[in-house]
Image 1 (tube, rainbow, N blue to C red):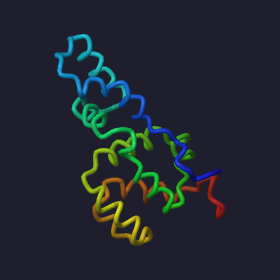
Image 2 (image 1 turned 180 degrees about the vertical axis):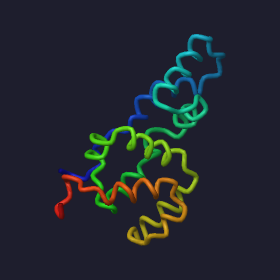
Image 3 (image 1 turned 60 degrees about the horizontal axis):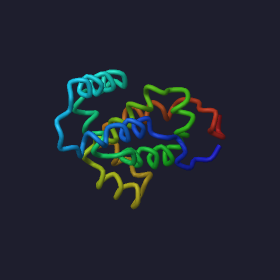
Image 4 (image 1 turned 45 degrees about the vertical axis):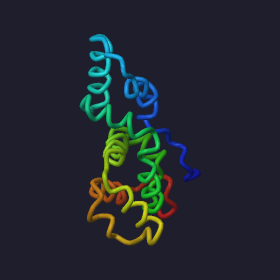
Length: 139
């Protein structure tokens, strides 16, 4: 299975749906607000987080995919077998404020464990890393 960025972010559809709200200068109707609250609830985030995810866009979790590649975690397999965990990883990465540092560390020395000091996904990624994934040759 290819390790290319093929797993589509579950936030992409949400971002497309919400992007009209973000730039809109008009007042939202109560119906639209209720719909946004319901959507946020359905995906397990607050309305404020949903708004922030819409602002940051669908590529906001791309560094997660790069980190998973370094850790030999197939994002498609993780997304398929641990959907809720993968979505949470994407949400946390999307909302992270350490993107510049993460991108720099991935570019300089992706195997350096320093990323674990600032990455909010470090524990989850480490736990996933010890599981026997089908896509790994050593299992």
